[in-house]
Image 1 (cartoon, helix red, strand yellow):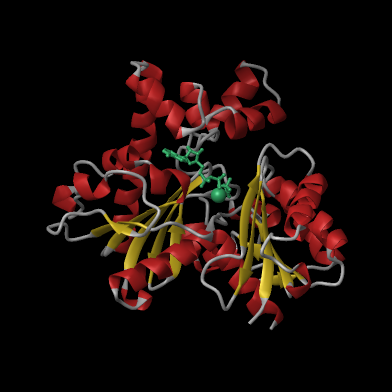
Image 2: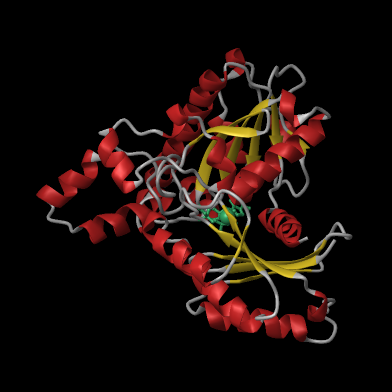
Length: 373
Ligand SMILES: Nc1ncnc2c1ncn2[C@@H]1O[C@H](COP(=O)(O)OP(=O)(O)O)[C@@H](O)[C@H]1O
Ligand SMILES: CC(=O)OP(=O)(O)O
Ligand SMILES: [Mg+2]
């Protein structure tokens, strides 16, 4: 039992929740957008929670839980934060350049605001620590890989873990008996193959750049694209980094990183927007096929996060044409945004397709409270 303030500090936003384990709904939930200064954002959050009528008594807090994206090989469990842990998280920033720096800024500001409380880091990478060696190993010189820690880590683990357990519960079967593919499609996006509740493959790699097409990130490309741009276009490493992480994906293809804008312009007749959607959905379909083959048996495909929960067009198009593989969406069940878990496959579909809203903040709260109990 306990009460947690959860901070999910992103590159441009801070999401927060106050969670009491004895209550299903959060006591407070919010989002501060267009954040440039995380100390300032956290001060704003604390001010608004301190107001009478906020529904929260901050004196009741027992822990502050922080989302940290990259935990590297060091962290595979919830970790109580001290100065050493903060330094380790800072060192891992090169392996999650859009994420660990804001995560850390949030930790520093919150430790100053609540010095008397324990602070716990919950890592995106932790759930993927079960990846088999063959799934996390890149086919490069193994001495170079070992010396520089080059391997696949995987991200969005808190979401993949929560959503896979929630899906098993909804299907009325033990998660230990199920094989599923979870598609976390937010601004960042990743697929995970989950067997018996354990992650056995995932599309993000050393950093959150690999895999699916995302809002501003390219996902999979030939690594020689980087070399080519450096050699023939004279781009620096930092320029290529910014290109692939910040100016690619849907933004690079269509001019918009938000799927609502992409659909709108596609419907207005933009060829680029329509092509962007085709590239996005084709990549998802490819990963579903790949993970289906790796798992050998599949019970469910699950959509979650901003795009997965809200974008019926992406769901429909990415799983189109898979009836022979036992995957068939029902267009009527699929239609619309899903605020609640929803079965969207036909009754004839051998493999169930679900939309299950994620709740990273609640999961972080529960894990943080457990870590200090
Ligand atoms: N109604 C909607 N229809 C289609 N896409 C949506 C809708 N609402 C949100 N999205 C998509 O969800 C994305 C944000 O997803 P989210 O999971 O909140 O991302 P993050 O946690 O990375 O900020 C937006 O960029 C947008 O593409
Ligand atoms: C790891 C990652 O890509 O996170 P987000 O989707 O929040 O950007
Ligand atoms: Mg997210």
